[in-house]
Each structure stands twice: as C-alpha cells, then as structure tokens.
Length: 307
Image 1 (tube, helix red, strand yellow):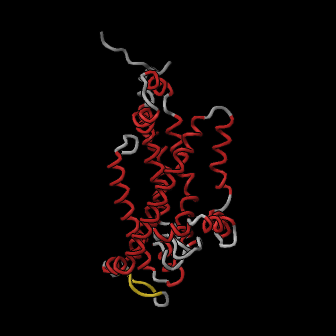
Image 2 (tube, helix red, strand yellow):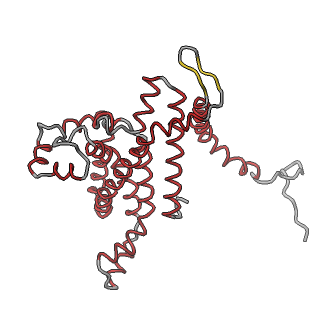
Image 3 (cartoon, one colour):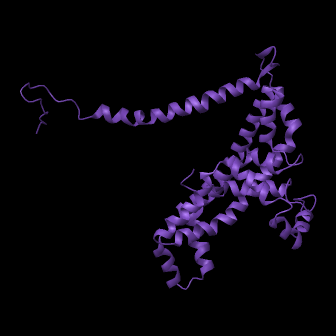
C-alpha cells in the first residue's frame, strides 16, 4: 500500500520532515560556546606564544619574526636541570597525594548521611583561601622556632631528610622537602575528589559477594576496589601532576636557589629579564614534555573512560 504523506491542514501541502534539520545542527550549536572559548583563550594564545618564541629582538627596539628555532636548543641546554627538577617534584607530590588521598577518599565514600558531605566540605575548604595565602602559611608551619621543626629535630627526622637529600641542614624551610610539602598540600583536593567519585560508584554488592566467597579484605581490595577506582586514580594523578609541574609559587616561597622549578624560570624570563622569545620557548618545551608524559601514562593506564 502506498504511503500517504501528511499534509498541512486546509492547504494540502506536504509537511516538512519532522525537525530533521534542527536535530542536525543543535548539537553543534551547543558545542559552539565551548569551542569559541577554547579558540579564544587556548588556540589564539598558543599561536601567539609559538610565534613569539620564533622572534628576535629586544623590548626597546621591538621583536621581529625570524623563525629562529635555535632558541629551543638554547632553552633546553640552559634550563634542562630545572625541567627535570620540576618533573621530579611534581611526580613525588603526585605519589604523596595518591598515598594520602586514597585512604581519605575511601573513608569518605564509605560514610553515610551528612558526615559524607561534611567531610567533602572539609576537603574543599582550603579552596576558600587564596593559593598564595595557603603557601605562605607553610612558611610559618615549617619555621625553625615553631613546634613542627622542633619535633622534627627531636625525633631526628631532619637527619633522615638530610640523608635522602631533601634538606641541607636541620631547617625544614627553604628546602626540597618544603617545596614538595607545599605542592602536596595545595594539590591534595585535586586527587581526593576524583578518587571519591570513583569509589562512591563501586557497587557494594560486589564487595558483599567477595566476602561471601571468603575473599580476604586485601584480595577484595586488589581484585574489586582498586580496578574499579582506576579511572579516579588516573584522573587524580593527571589533575595533580600537570599543574604541579608548572607551578612556581611553592618553589619561590618555600625553596631556595637550588630548588628553582621551570615555572619560576619562565616567570623570571617574562617579567624581569624580559626575554620573551626564551620564555615562550621554555613554555612550549614544558607543554610538549607534559603532553608526552601524560600520553604515555594514559596509554599505559589504559582506562576506557579516559582513552
């Protein structure tokens, strides 16, 4: 039987396809604000930074685009220790935030009722204070005349830190130890929140089934809890490592001349030395380095929710 086309009442004209064209462009229209935002505030600055790294000149006489790619070799040759140091500090802080954040996130996810929300508020409470203020507070916490440093000396913890090379003397401040402590503290919530999100979604019936099958708590954690929380582990480590590698506040306020990170070098080249091409080249080198490490890590982790 031939299909009878619907018609507009009173006119006999066929109706247009029902919202076919609207369905096609609506998803793109919804993406448009986000794409515009990324283009204006990410793509354009990146193109500008890349162009700036290939220029020559000075502030007084202006800069001219010359395609000077040798600046990247000069940047790597002069500042490779700071690059490696930044990756080392950020990696160490990421591991510490994972060790501290995982039990905390597990504890919060296992709570019921209002206590869960109270603990979550306490995790994000530091965000109500400025990043700079939180870092400055560590200058007081680790100062020689206050109890933390006194207890570290009394317990010979400072001797251990000197043995592993994290401090040069009995002072905790102005050392690698202080910089790593600052990074760990400031980025801990970035680790806890994704971990909590993953752990909170673990089906309790799986854990109950494991207990019914006489699995030990360790086996239950190794075979069920840890694999199901891996998306949160990957997300948390990325959210912690990426900003920590480019951080310069902690190394400036809590470190010394031997703990300078690459972010501090870029800041100095941009704002004090005024060597814009070198600063832009260092920024690109850091970007490529982090992209390479993150890509290798995500492919290695292989969580389906991220790759």
